[in-house]
Each structure stands twice: as structure tokens, then as C-alpha cells.
Image 1 (tube, helix red, strand yellow):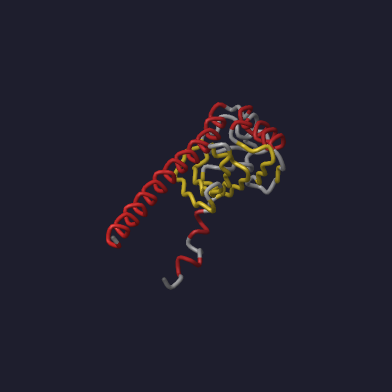
Image 2: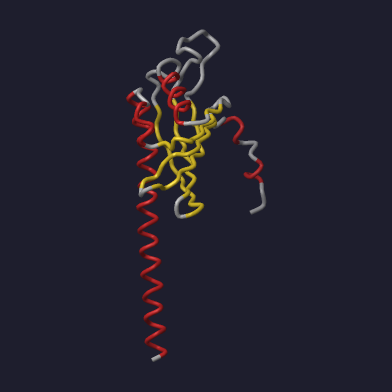
Length: 173
């Protein structure tokens, strides 16, 4: 009898692990889909659909430290920049690493390459060239009603010249 109970518990535990792994892969796909929606808005040059993948109370800190405090501000700012300095600028996704904090909260580390752009208005003034480098975003997502939503993000340039000075590269493992 004890042996049967043990075998049943072992099978149940294995089933739970498989189901959790399947759920996690569905969640990862959902998160990647949400990030892809942002990418599609960028490519279209139209962020009117942000309310379909950002929470109303979202926050966003852009590459130069501008902090936008809700969907209305985030959407307005992205639309303003995609219509000026970032107009026609291409991005290419490099990688997405996902860390689950809880069942309904995750952080995505989203590495992309962004093409050259000229702030503030998209015009090359000789000393205002930006981009043509990698950019990493830390994106906090929440799962609500079965969908993953961006609730906070911050993005930073990856400065390749500084990479050699990363102290972690020289840390004893």
C-alpha cells in the first residue's frame, strides 16, 4: 500500500512539474508577444494601440532619464519621438531574457539594436548623432485576465567601449 501511495505521489509531482513548465513556456510566449506588439507599433510609427499592451498606470523612463507616469504620457511621448527624431529609425531585436518574480509578475531584459537617429528633431546638425548601438530595456510585466501587460520600463544604451571595464568580467567565479 505504501509503495502505491509513493508511486502515485511521484507521478503527481512529475505531472505538476510538466504542467508548470508548460504554463511557463506559455507565459514566456505571451511576454514575447507583448514586447513584439511594442516593436510593431514602432515599425508602424504609430503608438495609438499602446492601451492594448500597457497598463493605464504604467511608467517609462527613457534613455535620457525622462520619466513618464501613466499611459497617456507614455503614449504621447513615444508618438512625439517616433514622429521626429526616431522617424524611420529601425530596431532589431537581439535577445529577450525573462525572470519570473511571481506567477503574475515578470521582468524582461530586452536587448535590441537601434539605428542612427538625430535628436531632438531628426535633423543631422553635425553633432547630434545618436543610436547605431545596442540598447537594453528592463521591462516589468504583469499578467491580468490571462494577458501580459507592460507596467514599467526603462531603457539604456549599451556602451561597447565601457564593456571591457565591467568589474564582473574580472570577478573570481
